[in-house]
Image (cartoon, rainbow, N blue to C red; front, side):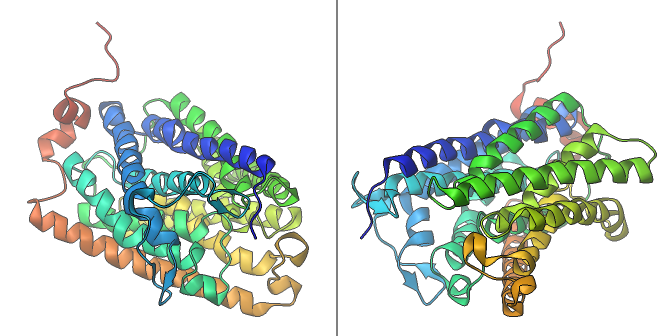
Length: 404
């Protein structure tokens, strides 16, 4: 029988606010700083509107379908619409169910916000506003159920502590699918208009990520402490490794590279934070930025896709690595599950299956959805003159900077 814990509740309340911080303002500042000056407000708006739409849908029916009683391993049974029937004293584990609903709402909203980074500067705002709720219903909610809500991947034994598949692979591969439908920008260079904004956003992401990973065990205990330690280690190692790569490849360290490495490390450790020790975190943190660096500077030019702010390159690729690495480095003394290094090669196979399933499903549905909207809306991409002139002026009739 579940017993209420004031300590666990207080901790998850804090973690929920930290995850909220990751979307508003962390992702908004991070993406806004990386974008061109003429698109900074639109870039920030995409984050805010996505999070707001998901916040509404989640309490009406999203949570219920993601975490309701399992139906054939695919989706949750519809119940408690508008959260009716969930009382103030209803519990999930040792915390109020209403708190768990909000914690998971922040994850869902953050996932959509992350996805927007690949599409900045060329997607119609109306198309994004329509795409987000449909994508959440068709992609995020089912995958969340598969992995966390009792669905088929959870039944198989897939490990995803805080969202390697559900958040990062899901958002990364979906963003890539939509970017392919949109096509390349007229000017595909990445020259941040305000790197200071991006650094602030990355710093807030690092801070908020401690709640993102630290709260995913839903308790104020040693597992939460371990999740915070390994997350911080992976971020720090990721930053150092990317800095070394920049120094070796381009001849100088860059601040943009440093913050990219930190985010890659955090993405990589996310699925593993509740299952690996410091040794595993160090290896995950070393490899994640190498994989993302390769994706951004070699795969993207080779295949010619325009992932504007490298959502697939960082969240997708490092998320794939993190999910697979969980199957390698999971140690029973942390989360009770053993990976390849601790005598359970089957776990690695399960992790690979979860990665492939998420990639195929999310990419296919996202691509088809984007194609349908493209046909129905006479294009989901802005007109050429709007793209060249900037979306802030042409869509919002506003400017981030008024110097008069």
